[in-house]
Each structure stands twice: as structure tokens, then as C-alpha cells.
Image 1 (cartoon, rainbow, N blue to C red):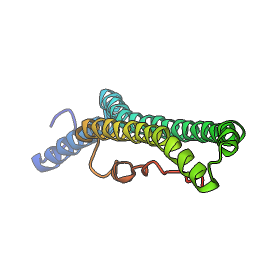
Image 2: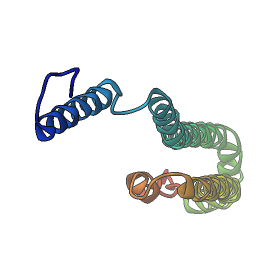
Image 3: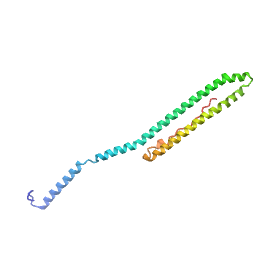
Length: 169
């Protein structure tokens, strides 16, 4: 009390409490709301959470590329079929007509001969497609526990269609 010149204890006590509150307020204001290590941790956590989503997106792009490759393979097979038909028309069909085989029988022979390779090619395409779909579902099911709920809803439900047959007649 001698240092401050105050005569009553209550005034002195009030000044000490005000100084303590001011010091406490100054101390809390100087501390950042979020520590730097927490920001760094949150950044790492965000990158870890984003990684499975990027993997899913890259996997989806890879499956789309494989679908395009399968469609191109089907186009190549269709061209091979067309070349086979041309060789049949100008090769074997001409010889068989000269031997007296009628047009309906020629058509039936060609269809029987063309059915086996076509069925084989489309069977292989279906097998490859099923294998890709199984691989994709295994890939996505492995990622589901790593990704927060709901983020894969659009990706998991999206499956590609089946291999379509092309009719040439």
C-alpha cells in the first residue's frame, strides 16, 4: 500500500485483480488459436484423405480406357468378320455356286462357319469385361474403409454395361 499510495485495501486489491486480468488477457491474445503443428497435421490428414479419392478417380479412368480398348477390339473383330465375308463371297461361294449349291445353302454354310469364331471372340470379350468388373469391385471395396462415408457413392454405383453383340445381318 505504501508503494501505490492507496489507503484502503479494497482499492489496492481491485488494482491487483485488474492487473492480473489484463496480464491473463494479454497472454491468451498472444497465443494463436491453432498451433502450427496442428495446422501441419491437418494438412497431412487432408492429403491422406484425398489420396484414396485420387486413386479411385485414376482407377475409374483406367477402367474407362480399358472399355475403349475393348470397343476398339470389337471393331477390329468386326472388320475381320467383314474381310472373312468378302473372302467367302469371292472365293468359296463362287466355287460352291459352280458346283450347284443354292443361295440359301451358301448362306447357311457361311453362318455356321462364322458363328464359331464370332461366339469365341464375344465370349472372350465378356470374360475380359467380367474380370475387369471383379477387379474394380475388389479395388473399390479395399478403398471403402479408407474413405469417409458417402464420398464414393457416385463411383461405387457406376458400373459399365455388358459387351454388346454386333449383328451383321
